[in-house]
Amino acid sequence: TTTAPIKMRYEEDADMREVLFSADVLAAKVAELGKQISEDFAGKPVVLLGVATGAFLFLADLARAISLPVQIDFVKAASYGVGTTSSGAVAITKDTVLDLVGQNVIVVEDIIDTGHTLNKLVKHLSHKAPATVSVCALLNKEARRVVSIEYPPGGKEYIGFPSPDEFVVGYGLDFAERYRSLPYIGILKPEIFS
Ligand code: 5GP
Ligand code: MG
Ligand code: MG
Image 1 (spheres, rainbow, N blue to C red):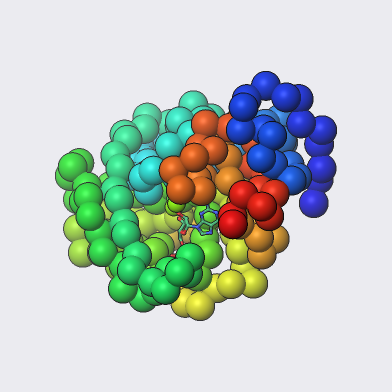
Image 2 (image 1 turned 90 degrees about the vertical axis):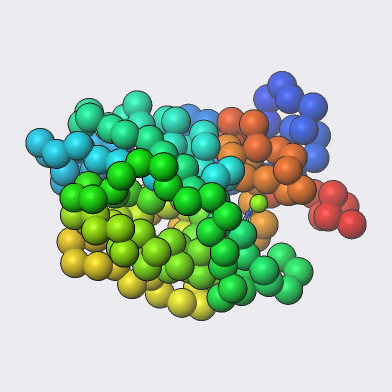
C-alpha cells in the first residue's frame, strides 16, 4: 500500500481516507501494460472492449499506451447479488457493436472481484468467433475470487495491481456513481458508507 498525500484539488478528495495508487503510479502502470500488449500482439490490430462504466478512464489511457491499431467498443454488465457482492447472475445489459469475428479482443475492466462478471463476459464473447479473448484489469482483488475466468485458447490476462480487500474508488470506480473522475484510486472514510 503506497500512501501519497492528497493534494486537495477536487471536492471529493475530502471523503478519502487513504490514497492507494496516485495518478503518477497509475500512469506508469498503464504505460507498462500498453507496452506489454503492444509486444504480445505486434503486427495485429486489437479491439479494446471496455466494461462500462468503471473502465472508461483506464481504457482511455490504455488505448493511448498501445502502439497498435486499436478499435474501441463498450459492454455493460449488471450483477444481481446480495448487497455489494456480485452473484453468478450476471446480465449483459449492453452488448458489443463491433463485429468481433477474427479479432483479438481485450476486455478492459477496472477491477476483478469475485470474477463472475469477467467469467460471464469472456464466455459470451467467445461465441462471437473472435481470434482470441484476453482480459486487462487494472486491479485484482485476489482474496475475493469465487470463480476463475475460463479463457479460450490464446487468451492472456493482464493485471495492473493486486488490490487489498477494501472497497476502492476513483479513476473510473464509483461509490453510488460518485468519485469516478478522481485521477487516483483510494479508500473512502468509513463514515461515507453509513
Ligand atoms: P465481480 O463480478 O468480479 O465480483 O465484480 C466486478 C465489478 O464489481 C467490478 O467491475 C466493479 O464494477 C465492482 N467492484 C468490485 N470491487 C469494487 C471496489 O472495490 N470498488 C468499486 N467501486 N467497484 C467494485
Ligand atoms: Mg467494472
Ligand atoms: Mg460500480
